[in-house]
Picture 1 (cartoon, rainbow over the protein chains, first blue to last red):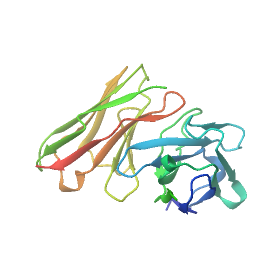
Picture 2 (picture 1 turned 30 degrees about the horizontal axis):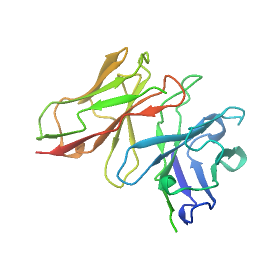
Picture 3 (picture 1 turned 135 degrees about the vertical axis):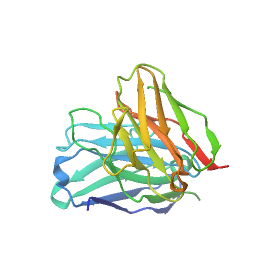
Length: 122
Length: 107
């Protein structure tokens, strides 16, 4: 079964840092582009960042560019999100999401993790 | 950025009803549109891609259509397990963007 499992969420003070991890199982992790998507409490979905298979194409939402860093370790089948200079508005459930790999270029998200909650508060 | 606008924001319907949700893009997205279903406390579930391609395992009562800027998700006969929030998403260009969601509630 294809599965994504996030970890690393928690409570952090404004200005603090946190690193999220997402481990993939049941598929060849290195062959698929990966993303982070977040959802603030009671709100809709917001794409955060994307990384291609070889880590040579990386994209960020304007709201996190310069503060967040997406990376991956294909040998460990793991996706990361390093979050620095955290703000209250970064409070959300963070989901990792896999792309189906049908085409080159942007794709939808066919598999999602269960999410990890990040709360930024003093 | 491409703005995605869903309507309605919420609706009440009964089991067996036909339900249609609309998603409008701020510019043409050439069918690069996906739909997701999300239930409370759960991750989104991928339903359709390319505006009308049903994903494996998704019931055939779900269908999608549209072109250009206007797209629809239709549930032909609403079932109890379909009460959820539905999101559209364009993947035509970066950044990928979502509609604000449509909550389907029990009448």
